[in-house]
Image 1 (cartoon, rainbow, N blue to C red):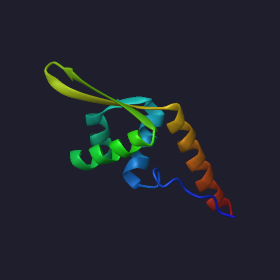
Image 2: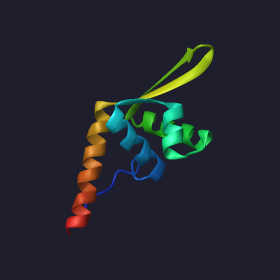
Image 3: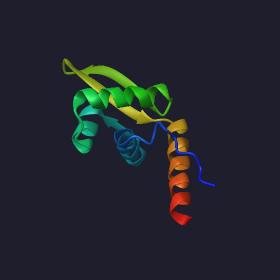
Image 4: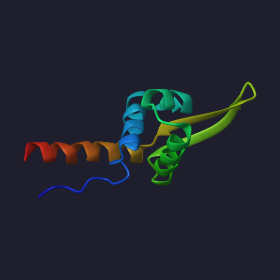
Length: 94
């Protein structure tokens, strides 16, 4: 039987953000925006969904009088990502 895929991670942009954060652990909003090619508005919405799910932590601060948003993957996010990848692999192997 096929395993259920996490609907939070099954979105292309959210999966891209998580993939980036898994590899770098923490990244600024601008980095994620450049790497994903997403608009600022769409990326903000998807980051909020990942935060609400507990998959990432978001820290907002000011750096040289400019707002700075930093995202970091949580232990729950790492577990969810690994589970998602294993579920996808089970689809391929069947």
